[in-house]
Image (cartoon, rainbow, N blue to C red; front, top):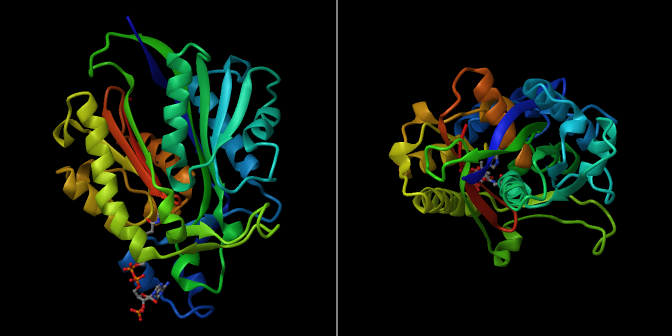
Length: 324
Ligand code: UT7
């Protein structure tokens, strides 16, 4: 018998306000045409005034619980991947715990920026395999609109707000790659790339929350190379290749990165879940959002082999292989 962390439910939440590319035209020297051609983004959602990351995450959590047919008290732990917490502390995870009416178990945040959900999944998997929790809500939730410099056209058109949630639960498997659940993980980081993508404020430096700064073309170069590499590493651990993959569910930063990675993995775009046109880059929320939307569209089905991969500030990057 091999213990596996298996997907029991999925859900997402997007703030009501949709911001089309056209809203940036006139305010900045940019165009709908440039944004679509260089990124694939058509629109993104922005949180309303007073709507926080934990509000978005709690709504996604409720959707995942409903999908799983579970009550909040069925959950042992909550892990939230976010870089845009409501407050410096306590964690967004404990705030969501309170919002969904749960007083038991444990909750904490993981901060690996755009790769956060992949890191959170790997941590949830380890907690389940080590017997410390049986059912974990893994949430990616972000309000990146709060840290955008709306005078910087090279960053403010790229990001959006949203949240997605997955419920993982312990189940018995055989140990083979045909098992449902998380089959392999691969995590990496290199802090020497700090200046490629960072926020220019923080508690112990400026005492302010700061704004996102990015050398986009540098990050782009690392992304295409490192994402295919990490996906191959994770697949290789269980003797699989791109040919075995039913769906790549990538971090949704840029359609050109998504296409470049799929090409390197020899996976056709028909087998890639793409939501970047509708959500923009929602950082740690992008993968659970894409999983939920992909399931809703009828793309992702029980038994499908899925590879998720992401890269972001740090740099931090990684990949998780799971059978739905
Ligand atoms: O999720 C975390 C990871 N982040 C990413 O994966 C983002 C990775 N990077 C990217 O997606 C792309 O690099 C960008 C979309 C950010 C930029 O695309 P690019 O093809 O790499 O363009 P570039 O940065 O090399 O800039 C090309 C030109 C520049 O003008 P000059 O210097 O050639 O005159 C920019 O100033 O495009 C200009 N530009 C814009 N023009 C119109 C940059 N942003 C805009 C804009 N509208 N919004």
